Length: 302
Image (cartoon, rainbow, N blue to C red; front, side):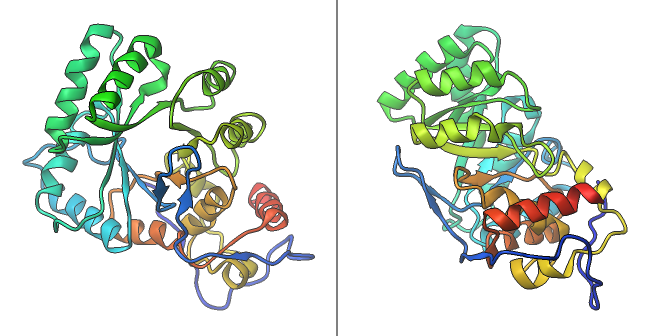
C-alpha cells in the first residue's frame, strides 16, 4: 500500500490560496436518506483486497484492530461482496470478538451470473456475517440485475434484508445505471467518485438527489493511486486551517462527503492508524462549493 503523507509543522503556503470561501461546519455528520429514512455515518469501510485473508493468517489481529478503530470512532457501514474472497467470512468472524454495542451496518452484494444462485448467495452471506437480517444487499456491477432485484425485493418483503441497492465502479455503464436509478424501486446506489474521477457529478449524483437515493462512494483513493500523486507533498496550510485536515486521506475524503448528494464513502485499509485518519474526515469542517473547486485545482496542479 502507498505510504500516506501526513501534515507536519511549519507547512509552506501552496498555490490557489487566494479567495478561499469559508468551510461549513460539521460534527461527525449523519446525512439523512430522504426516501428510506436511513441515516449513516459519512465514513464507512470497504473490504475489497484488504480483508481477503485466511482465518489462520497472522494479519487477522491487524484486521481486528482496524475494526476496533472503525467502531471506536463511530463507524457503521462495512461493505463487502462474495467477489472479495474471504472478506465476508473474516468480517463475520471478527465481529464476534468485538463488543456487542458495535454499531454495524452490514452491506454486501449479490454477484453471480446464474439467477437461481442468488437465493443461495444471500443465505451464505447471512451465515458468513452471522446476521439473520442483512442491512443492505446490492446487485454487484449490475450483474443479472433483473432476476436478482426480483429476488431481493421478495427477501425485503420477508424481512431478511432491510435495503436494496445497485452498484457499479470504474466509471462504467453510467447510461444504463442512470436509467435504472430512475426506473427501479431501490434504496441505495454505489459508484466511483473522487477528486479526479468526477464523471458522476454530471448525471448520477443529481439523479440520486432527484430520486431520494442513498449514495455510497467506492474507490475514493483510486485503490491507493491518489497517494502517489501527493508523495512528498505537504498539505496546503489552508487545508489545515479551513478544513481541519491532518492528512491527505482526510483531504480526499472530505471532498467526497461534502457533496450534498453523498451519504457514505467506503475507503478500505489494512491498518488501524490509516483507519483513524479516515474516520477523522467525518469530523471538523467540510468545504463549501467554492472551497471544493479550490481543492480540485490544487490537487490537479500537483
